[in-house]
Structure formats: C-alpha cells, structure tokens
Image 1 (cartoon, rainbow, N blue to C red):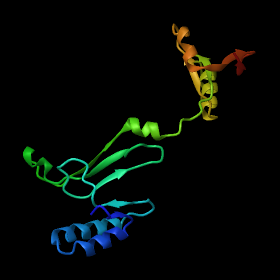
Image 2 (image 1 turned 135 degrees about the vertical axis):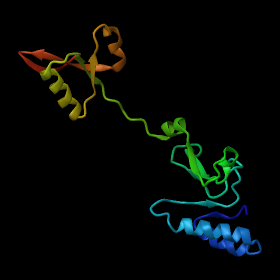
Image 3 (image 1 turned 90 degrees about the horizontal axis):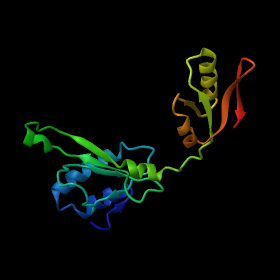
Image 4 (image 1 turned 180 degrees about the vertical axis):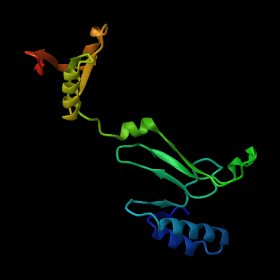
Length: 170
C-alpha cells in the first residue's frame, strides 16, 4: 500500500495487487470512475493515506498549492454521519484553512493611496469614482478622523482647484 502513490496508473496497479479483496476492488473501481471525470488539474493518488477523520466513508481529497506548507483544503464523502441526528443521507464537505491560504498567496505590492475629503458633492464623487475605475486606491477622510489618515500611506490628495478636482502630491 505504501508504494501505491502517483498518477491514475496507480489505481490500475492497485487493482492488480489487491485483487484478492473484492471490497477494495469495488472501491478502486469507484475511484477510477471519479478519476476519469477529473480534467485540467494535476491529481495524485495516495492509497495509504490514513489521515483525517474516521467518519469519512468514501473518497477523500486534499488541495495543495505552491508556497503552502500543508493542504489548504481537506474534505471528502461522509455518508451516514447524520444518522445519529435522524438524517441518514449522503453527504460531502470540506474545510478550508484561510490562514494557510493567505500565507500561500504572493503578497501584492501596495501602491500609496490618494486621500480625498468626505462629501456627497456630485463632482467629487465622480472624481473619486474615475480614480478608482483607473485602479487607484482612494481613501475618503471622514470628519473627525483626520488623525487616522496616516495609516493608509497616502502620498497624494484630491483637492479642488479653480472648481476642478485634481490630484496633487502631499
């Protein structure tokens, strides 16, 4: 079992090696069927993997990503787990480690933001919308929160000059 790890050819190899166990052969046939429906992703099969919860009753999976130390997602089939609650029916699910997911993502280089005053004035709102549409980060400074604006690292500000809203260096 320990050597049965790799691509879908492992399933055929396991079928031959474990032919004396009909229940295993049936499970492998189901796994081969499932493998035949997976397209466009790299899939590995580990038939000796016994990690996870004891309530799984079918195929289990893990999703890995470059930069992650462990699986980001774990899940699988767990029929009959709801029987104790009077709901004995098929089920499947997964868990996602959000901290591991964030840790595996390349950090983006943040650009400095543009500080803008808070107002409902249509011309100002249009200027802010246009800057954001162009990919800029615009932080509206709420009245009474002037001391908090430095946390956004604004290197420019939106100001009104001669009736027009323009961006200028801070």
